[in-house]
Image (cartoon, rainbow, N blue to C red; front, side, top):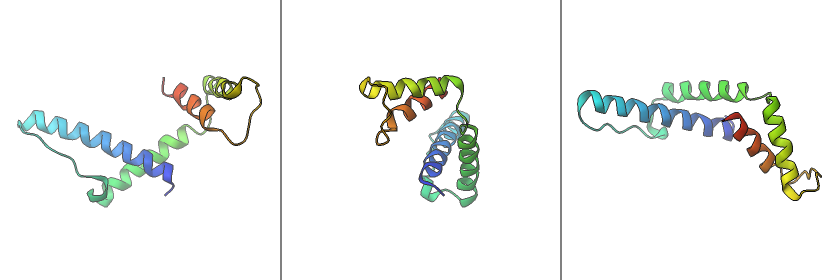
Length: 101
């Protein structure tokens, strides 16, 4: 499992668990707390991992807006329009930010 796939799986798991616990708390009138990732049953982690892989695969091909945002991200590095190989974080984040809009 890649570091990114696990990061996404953990975020999916936490989001689902927070929702589930909030709904159970409303239903039963007392607070429920969720299991940490490390303590969750293996099949729960596997389901989150499957969802994470599907989400990452769906983002493999960027949209036109993401490509535009990535280009702006490169240009914002120093204004020269030169695309240095050592600093891909800003355009990548700009592309992901566009996808999340």
